[in-house]
Image (cartoon, rainbow, N blue to C red; front, side):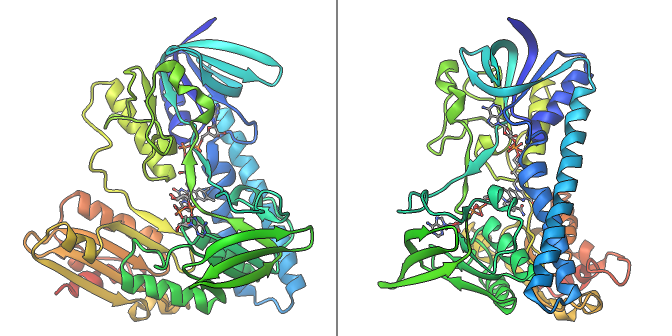
Length: 456
Ligand SMILES: Cc1cc2nc3c(=O)[nH]c(=O)nc-3n(C[C@H](O)[C@H](O)[C@H](O)COP(=O)(O)OP(=O)(O)OC[C@H]3O[C@@H](n4cnc5c(N)ncnc54)[C@H](O)[C@@H]3O)c2cc1C
Ligand SMILES: NC(=O)c1ccc[n+]([C@@H]2O[C@H](COP(=O)([O-])OP(=O)(O)OC[C@H]3O[C@@H](n4cnc5c(N)ncnc54)[C@H](O)[C@@H]3O)[C@@H](O)[C@H]2O)c1
């Protein structure tokens, strides 16, 4: 049996970064990946990168103002080809980067535990068991598909992964779920020229967000032609090669919607089923995630978990940060996953970005002197230059300490701006630093001067 200092199961962001790091230190590393279409993980192959390539192409599609659906469909086809080129280029780059080290061995196979130090690799032809002094689980998550009658038999039903292979622009895309994936796909498919209907189980639109901003988001997306059906209880899905039909109930009334593709975007669950974690004595949480402490150490001290499989926020940069946490634990450092201030962006048009608390959350947390500020996006000169005078920016301040408690930015380029607010928060800066910061002009960032000057 081959022995390794580190066996890493899953070629995701945290895993591949750790593999390169440990191999660079002279450690013998095995990196196990079950699909040769997934080197680099979800982000590169079926997540962030392909969707953001399509988000960008969809923006171009809007700017071109195509007349006919045929022209739109042709542009969509070429956008899918560009997305594919990009993904294949990055996949190879990711593989080559790890493979370049003599200390790293990439196994094409599915890993599962045999014991607490042994991992069985199910290869295409045969199997092999390897020994790991330390073992790192980085197997990510997969789409959760709810058990709705007819769903598994109906044609033209997709997850975010399989929809990314659809070469024909759907005339009418139905989306089940109004979370991150649902909204991003709704936004870019509407920009490409599809009619889009989103069925959302909950009655509150993006319920975790500031209500005023959430309303602004809904209005902007409706203006793009997207229809939202809230409190929709999906009853039955049917359809053949030509069309898909969703039967749902709203307020006790039965309705149907007919489309030519259905995207199921109802959340993602950690990938632990295949791992046989019980053979290693590794405990899991009720949602299947590996149970870890603040160092991302599992119930076995030599086994760690990073990224989506550890059950936290599902973002590529969280998986990367988990690598930092694990590295810190391995080298006696003090950096942990506790109290991380994690920003996020939903790449709709314009993007919605958030860090920290909303006003409601700040009050619920017991802050006594909560101050707020807001700024409509049309007041920002650069938003006018970009011809995107849509959106709303809000900030939440602790009036006693002047510290920024959170911000929600719904405006063009908010995905870049939010990182500056996160930095100010991490440094414990007064909001007045951003109110008085010298920014270049004309930029969206300079709007932070006005936003934080409006604190009251
Ligand atoms: C459509 C979509 C869009 C997204 N957009 C964004 C975005 O814009 N920004 C952002 O930050 N995040 C985004 N995310 C989330 C982000 O992609 C994930 O949070 C991130 O990729 C998780 O990384 P990871 O390291 O946990 O694992 P992953 O990248 O998921 O990697 C896990 C790997 O393990 C492999 N594997 C699984 N089980 C086994 C096994 N038993 N043996 C061997 N290999 C195995 C898998 O094939 C996979 O390659 C998006 C996700 C989706 C689905
Ligand atoms: N920009 C980004 O960073 C980005 C983009 C896409 C995805 N992601 C990651 O991927 C994860 C998964 O995204 P997601 O959108 O699938 O999950 P999600 O948890 O964000 O949203 C799922 C939504 O589906 C709804 N839902 C569940 N069952 C339903 C049903 N039967 N009918 C109708 N609605 C139903 C839920 O109420 C929820 O609103 C996210 O949590 C996020 O971390 C990140």
